[in-house]
Structure formats: C-alpha cells, structure tokens
Length: 548
Image (cartoon, rainbow, N blue to C red; front, side, top):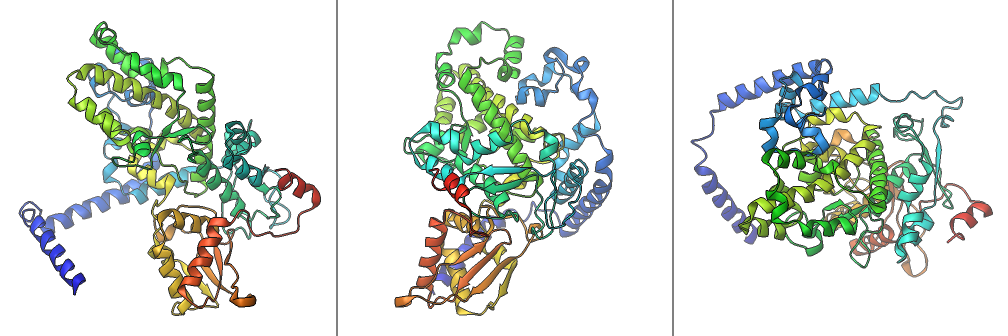
C-alpha cells in the first residue's frame, strides 16, 4: 500500500509538471514528419560520409588564419577555443564545418559504422599462421609481472610504483613501437572474437592468452593511474583528483585531471592586475589562444607529457579493439575538447572545482578571473595535446569531431553503471535454468552490489570493468555454468571460478542466498591471479612470485 501511494503521488506530480508543456509541443503528425526527415537524412549520410571531407586542407592554411593565423584552425590551435577570437579569425566556409555543426542530426550508429569502417581500412594487415590456433610471429609478445606490480602499488614507495606498475611495464615493453604495430586487429581462432595488437605473457601465473590476459592489462593499467594512496595523491602521478573529488562536493566527484608539477600549480597565484591591463586587446586574444603552447616546461612536466602520450596510444588501442576503459575525465575539459565542441571556461571550472567557480562568479575582478581561468585551463589543454598526439598514431582523430563529447565518452568508456538487466539479456546457462533458485539468488545478489563491487565482478568474469552500451555490442554471451565440485567438511562450499577469456562463471549450487553472496564477494575481492592453464616452471615462479 505504501508503494502504491508513493507511485500515485509521483504520477500526480509528474502530470502537473508536464501539463504546461502540452500546448508547446508539436502535433503528432509534425513529430512523425520530422522523424521521417531525420531517418531519410541518415540513410543518405550513411552512404555519403565516406565521400565528405571531415578536415579539408584549407582549414589548415595560414592564408585564412587572420590575425591569429600560423596554420591550425581556431578550434584546434593548442586545443584552446576562445569565443572572443572569432571576430579576428577568418572561418573558411566548408562542407566539413557545416558537417560538424550538424553533428547532432546524425544518428550515433551511422557515425559509429563510418568510423569503424575507416578503422578496419587503416588496420595493419597480419598474415595467418600455419597453425590457425596460434598467433603469427608479427603479433609481438609483451611480458607483464602483475604480482610485482600489485606489491609495488600497495607500498608507500612512489619510485617502486612508477617502476613496477603494469602501466610502466607496458610503457617500457612498447617503447619504440610504431603506430602501425598497435593498429593490428588480428582475431585468432578460439579467442572469442577478440581483436588484438599483441600477446600478453603474465609472468608467474601460468595463463594462456586466449583474450582474457589481453583485456586484463588494459583494465589494470587504467585502475593504476586512478589509484589514490594514503596521502590523497595518485600512485603514478599521471592523473590527479579534481577539487570536487578531493572535497566530496559538487557534481562529478569521481573525476580526475591531468597531473601538473607543483611549480606550475603555484605559478598562477602570482598573476596581477598589471599583467592583464598592460596588454592590448589583440595581444590578450593571442596570449589566450596560444597560452597552452607558450608555457615553460620542467623535467617533471616532460615526464607527465611522455606518460600521457603513451596513455593516448593505450586508450586508442583499447577503443580500436572494443575494450571500454575506465577513464573518469571531465566532460568539458577533455571529452568536448576532443570532439572540438565549444565549451565555456566557467562551465569547465564548475565541473572540477565548484568552490572556485562560486568565488570567481561572486568576485568583482572579472577580468583578472577570466585571465587566471584561461591560464589555468591552458595547462590542461597542453597535456591534452600530448594525449591526443599518442591517440592519433592509432585512431583517425580527425573523425572524432563528428561526435559530441557525450558520445565520445560513451564510445571510449562504455557504460559506467553496470546494468544488471543488460547483462541478464545476454546470459546463457549450462547445467542451470533461469528458474533455478541459485540463479535467482545470483541475480538478486548482483543487484544488491555497489557500483565498485559490480566492477570487481565484471573484471573477475570478463577482465574488464565496463559493459558495452547495448546488447548488440557484446562479442560473446555471458555464460553461467554449474560447478559440480564436492562440498568440503562442515559444509565448506567451494568458491566460484571464472574464465575471463570466454566470459563464463562456474557457480556451485549454494544452499541459500547468504552463502552465495559471501562466497562471491570473497572471490571478487581477493582474487590476485587468473586460473592457471598450465603448471609454471621454477624459473618463471622465481621471476614472478619469488621475485617479490
């Protein structure tokens, strides 16, 4: 009765709020006509996009650059779009500019299919091996010691973290690799349809890479760069939590920024009134537009830029091979800049530091605040340039401007919320049926989990912590099979096990929901290695386990 009362009240409130909108809405016939026009437009866009110039040569010409010329167009100059500079920058009319303005009219599926076809065309060809179950020699092997990495991340030594983390090991192993190597998309037989650019050897774990370890290293690397230690800093110093993240205020409390050296953070406090008033209007426009390209660099900044360049290559490779990554970066500073959308600087500050935003809005010195705001954001733009440079060697970044910032975030990161109902739509049972009591308890336990626990569960069974956006994006079904292991003494039930290569979970038939929940939570929170496929030799054990 209580729920019925709440539902009726909610329905009444919703009806009253929508009542005044009924007169402003178009007629059903008008809406249907607009939808028919959109569908017709997208049918033609699906055929016409490969023939349209997304980035024509005249947009990179210094002749049309105006006062703020030197080659790149306004929205790409240091990745710093300044709306005040539009009056002094000649924008050349072109099909691509109109296409970017109409990006909201094109269906995301049409744009995705176009970009996927370009990525398939630009993929590096790989010859088949004599044995169809073996990887060809052109697919290189990357050795990763996750056991040593986890011990290093758990320590308080920042030097060990940056030396032995999975991210650092991948960076060392791939140093000198060309973009063509990472643009491979080889699919081996029996690997679940997973595209790959390299093979992963997990030292000391005795695991064959049938796609599970390949996805696992991407997930581990992304988790390490957002790992926060006891001092409140990130373990690798590549990203740093936003002010909203640190203070637990505002929206986007889980977001991160590109890390900056401490010297550069303190430099913005010395801005004075004289600095802004001594420049002419045109000089201020030039300084704002190219501020990300005129900053002084130190050794720490260069190391951060080098790490971000590799991070861009890693994220681009994951996107090319259909692996969503957990990269919680701000929408305004990162994703919309990547899509070359116009962003208001104050909106960017509000997303990362709500308290600073309120101080700036309430202050009378708006001119100084604007300069400090632009100077602060310019450092993020420079770091974004390094990230984009790394990504450009793997992905056709010129095509990203046909998407919106929200769409790009969904393409690269997938679904941030682990949708249990979506997972249930792609499940297959082996030894169980959907009506079995243990299966009902399993789905109930999964719904009761927190978001972080669901991410751990997904990594436990699939070596990734993000789901695709829709059912058709799954490469393989989620398989739950019955585990017939015998029960130990005193009803000591075995733990569930998983095969990340084949997206399957072996689930014993537990007597009740509490036992299932206890065993499943323990398994996903305490697993350190994958299930072994073979017995490792003494040399590998000494390198992996004893090497700790």
